[in-house]
Amino acid sequence: MRVLYVTLAIVVSDQITKLLVKGFSLPFIDFYHQGMQLGQSIPVIGDFLRITFIENPGMAFGIEIGGRLFLALFTFIASIGIFVYLYKVRNEALVIRLTLAVILGGAIGNLIDRCFYGVIFGYAPLFYGKVVDFIDMDFFKIDFLGFYMDRFAVFNIADASVSTGIALILLFYKKFTDLDKSAAAVKEETVQYAAGEEKSDV
Image (tube, rainbow, N blue to C red; front, side, top):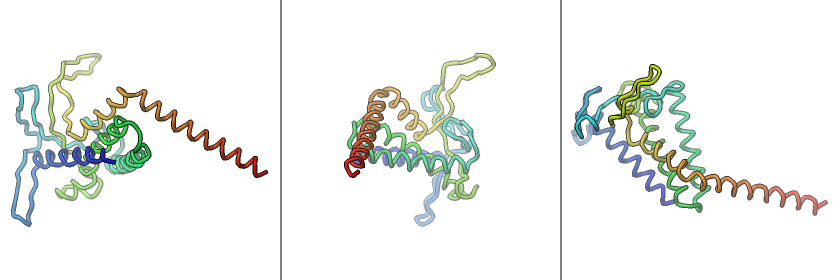
């Protein structure tokens, strides 16, 4: 399953960028990288693209559903499910495997934050960490029925990977539905074969 290299690349790049923003230390080689202050913003392309350091206790793009423990466990179970499914479809079209690998990389990237950052940085127990977000992009203004938005929610590489994966599913929806139909057909043939075997035994 060579597409897992894509998953690995996403996880590594996600964690490196988060640590560069948040800061980290390696005591065994006496190295310390200060990182940014929480809430600090650095312009990259004027006001259109900024690096803004925030910590998110919820899901991607600031969505909050359930507590931190629930999110950590849900993400962990979902990651295992995606990995197992990826193994099952290892001989299917590349776009299907690539899509799942991209989503898996994003899920693992944020899972590391939720599970271990609280312990590593000393602010929370295991599974109660916050996700580091830093990509801050301008967005066209929306002012409708009391809802106002002029910037996109701050996100990270893991969030972007999950969103990209979902977009690929929507874009190649037919391939995924064909895969489901194929799996259903194989299951039906297996059931019919088993029923036929039982009848012949009788």
